[in-house]
Amino acid sequence: MTDFKVTPLSEDSFRNAIRESTSPRAVYDMAPGEAYTKFFEGLREGKILGTKCPSCGLVHVPPKVYCQYCYLPLTQWVEVKDEGFVETAVVVYIAAERERLEKPEVVGVIRLEGSGDRYRYPGLMHRICTEPEEVKSSRIMGAKVKARWATERKGSINDIECFEVVSWK
Amino acid sequence: MDPIRVGIVSYGFSGFSPSVPSKSFREMVFEAASKAYAKVGLNPRTDVDAFVSCKEDFWEGISITDEFAPDQLGGALKPVFTVTGDGLLGIINAYMMIKTGAFDVIAVEAHGKPSEVMSYGDIERMAQDPIYLRPLAFPSYHTVKALEARAFMKYSNLTREDLGIYVSQSKRNGLLSNRAPHASSLTVDSYLSERELVGPLSHSDLAPRSDAALVFVLASEGRARELTDSPTWITGVGWATDYHTPSYRELGRDIATKNASEMAFRQAGLGDPGKQLAFVEADERYSFMALMEVSSMGLVKDLRQPLRSGDLSRDGSLPVNRRGGALSEGLPLEAHGLARLASACDLLDGTGAVVSNMGNTSAVLVVRP
Ligand SMILES: [Zn+2]
Image (cartoon, rainbow over all chains, first blue to last red; front, side, top):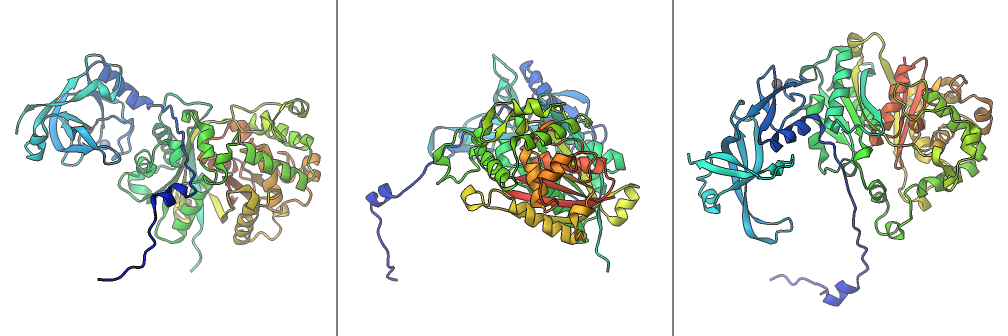
């Protein structure tokens, strides 16, 4: 075995080291803009709204005022169903610093019905209310889900509590 | 082979208002970009080879903010890169990319929405040395600039009255601009009656803030001539960065601007820029900065004479900010340099220098018709 020359550091050495801690204070009040404002107004009414591109036909959810593929302004608003299919999902067991969560959370990407191709579709990343087992077994992939709406809605993405499984693939 | 020339063929803007609450920054950039493309009939999806976006995560409140850059420019899934600095640095990057011969048309974007930054002073404080300066917790982030102002005024023998001449003239110039909500016919007397805020600076020395987005389109010579009859040619570029901590810097002069301008003037073949330049568009985050740049670029020997005689006014021999600067337009953070460049393009009647200085990074462009 190689004999490494090391200098051990005691707890005291760490404590006595000179340090300076800094706490950034970063506070913003961001304008959601024309597209998100209308989107959130829709959520408050229990509707998922998108903007439809006159050229490629893609319905943008969350909406934009332009199609990033065709570079055209989007002015046609459409309501999409609050139902869709699970593109992918994971079980999250840890918080930001890898602390174990008491209760794991299932997060997924939902493809909403309406338009699109394999890569481009109206969709939302959101919570999925299902058992971790259904995700670990991959049974959740492709499952049909529906938005569970909050009873009190205030124009926020949390007006949808989560997506619930309606039927398995 | 002749070197590739680079021209500005178009620009568009959105905002220049103390606050634009109805649009997100992406929607503002979309508006500015759509205007820039429409003027020269470009479809960014097919006709623009690459995109440059200038912004800083802390102002945006989004980290890895480069992913938020492409869509609104028409650059989705195309070559896009971001510059964490003033828009003029983005122009310089695009200029160099076109010079390589690998790109013909490039769009450059910068925007700022300071109205959304609720902890502005704290974000500014984050720019200070975190170990040595931040713990001193100076009350205002204007402190460093005020120290520079004092040192510069001493170096150049300027009085508050001299600053007043500049402020009054620049805010009046702003009255002729269509994007200057803070322009006014402020007199030197009313300027002098303002209370000191920090050091030699009073209210009208500090640029107010504004929300704005600007998009420029640059092209190689051949493409530029196809796209417009009147391109703005970029004939020299330079940039330099000075140290962040004031005690390491010469405060009476702006050495970064001096070095950047020497580089740009050399490329442009300007042996006597003070005589050869028809105008200057200078950074005006603070009143004194515009004067400090004119002096640091070596355009005048003794600032007092041209300032007091009116040579720096819009009808003078070396006009500075002919349609006002940030004192009139407000400061849209990273977009300020592009606002200066926009004014240069609007009034282009000779060879001019365009300068931005954010933090201690200076960028200088020489442009001509
Ligand atoms: Zn489209």
